[in-house]
Image (cartoon, rainbow over all chains, first blue to last red; front, side, top):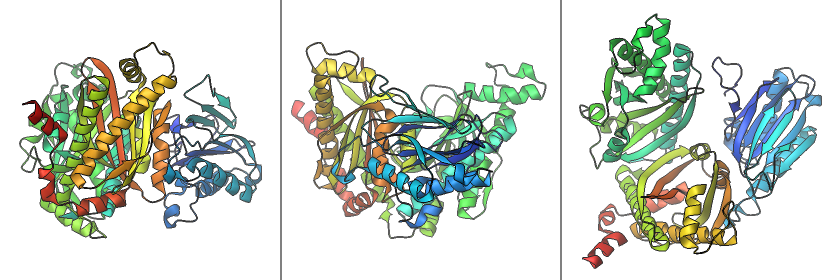
Length: 172
Length: 417
């Protein structure tokens, strides 16, 4: 698995594609663009400035067999993988806070059931609650896309939308 | 020769693993930060590969012959100017600044390009060997240069002929600051490919020849779609690019421009089922609305009338496209009512990826670009079928039928004559 920020030649800001996650610290910026129904999960420890961002596409990794190969793909396994890596890097588990963005439902297709975006957001909240990590900010749902930029050192999650008049830029 | 989704999945992992190693080595060698861009498996006819290589810009390439687990050729191709910029750094380190003359690709630059290309080729090959857990030997590299496809392909014994549907590994490596891109091609030999497919296949899969059905589906779909679009808007449209890619679901939004786009999305149902997306840049969408709606419309956004015009066009293009498929497959494919979207490009594709993600890791993407002479009418079409449905549809397809299926375009030609 890629751990950006430690390899020579790693680009900044680091792009976190779908099903990817990364842990970093300080002023490094982690960015995920074009979130629709996917969910961006940002975790950070305000004391050590260690944090991470995951860009998950599905809710439930525990229900499938291959989630250990791609933990970043599922909201639940992504959260646990982020936490583990942050703690390995020196973060204090009990101090960790969470912010969420994404989980839109832009299309009302029959095959999507009651909303793939909503399910992702609900799964992330449920896993965080189970692990005792407070959600201190969120910008989820609706019918529009989002691009997020996360700075672990400050815990700032900037959420941009295509239509700034309507949804604006949210700083969580 | 038969293949299945598992085989293609392994190939895809090879392509990505190889691109990762190649990018890493390039960084080590030149100190330039790189990242791996889109990686895909393409099914392309020889003539389209040639067209890709002959896009008018001067290209340089470094080609090696492979033997072992894969027999064939691996080739790294870059824009000549980009190659110049990459080697500039290397040459100035070696104290040969005067060699970086853009006009004369002298011996010094050539050998530097050769070195870079060789390092990248071996990166790719080592990545594939890792995935296959087998040895692949690499010949000494050849430097190729030209503005057409000939120098790159003509002396290859097994280069795909115009009508051959070749499986191509295509990866893009981008430098972070300089925006230099490289394309990588692997041309495997058919026999070696067949042996590899047999080794990797975990199910009965489909006959390679049936992939021809893919291409015919794509062709008929695209023709019907362009024609219906022309009828409705009065704008003469053409199919500029038509491609069949096999990619990981995660890679699909990466291909879509990270800008605000106007789109129409559908789900379709039948064998196959899946999703169909039409994405226009804003300028094109405005021009289409102007062509379809006689009165002045809101210039900034898309009001109710603009939206319904775009959706109507999407609807009729979707019917054309899917009718083309249904004709080739001799089946019926229904589609949903259109959903309008005006948002960041990748965000429009992401819900579809999420929708398919629970049941498949990879997808076949029928990737088509519709353009119009003298008009802004750039429409990217993504048709993404459910992969098990598609396999079923192709298995049912009689290859002989493909050739017999007439296109509406041909009917029309007959009518006119």
